[in-house]
Length: 330
Image 1: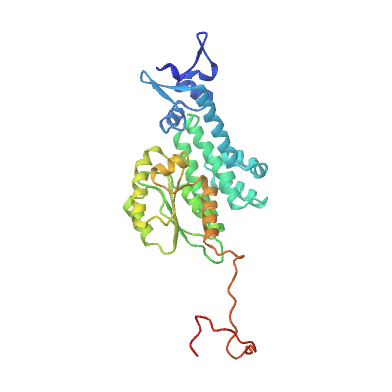
Image 2: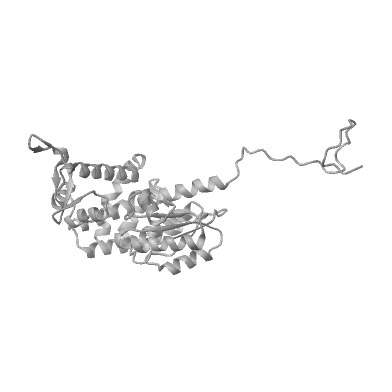
């Protein structure tokens, strides 16, 4: 290994440049070994191969922890945390036990206490599902438990979906879906509901949509204002890149294409796949659409042309004006 990967002072490597194995990093992060390995493979955790083994610098691990905590703080706004935290443990227990009726009652009690649908989806249901997924990744629960919890959550979203219908003028059509190989559709369903709540019409193709079919939908939907692609697994990145390339050829450069999901690390990663923008969660997606909508809307401060009075209403001026170049010849 090159010596410039770490510093040596009096024969002792500094703590900041300590090298860790994947197993040691997993222990520090309190996750399963395979979870830490996936972090390395997707390059969200920097690592270097030494003699066929992955080595992680302690400084890189600390930076990974900092970014992860930052993302968590963004996901749960402190203003809403007090309102929603009390429901997490109760909902988790209901989902783990596959008790759909009790789970719905937990969410309904949150709504009765003042939580809106965005808070229910993004600050209660979403974090609880993410926590259950992490429990499976750490080996704390069987995959069958996680699947049953997801199935219950899917039914809950189906029950809550009618509450996301918004009356009034529609703002345009948004197409969302997952590329070929993508297996997770629940996040798309929740995003679709929240987009409708904000006044957008939504065409949700679900997960695992062949590229040709995705492009056909994008080319045939009237008044399409944006396309969103969800990628949650590294295995779907290649098909996502193929889809984004085909979409760009089919719909041109004017229509924005966003990509998001757990497999997308940041803006640079999204653009390297061929997307225009990185959607950092449902709130980021909605904020982008709102911003674009505001750009298209004429400013209320813009001056408006005054109408000329109709022929019989105005009195002719007594002052003579020199003829302008646009006047008809007299």
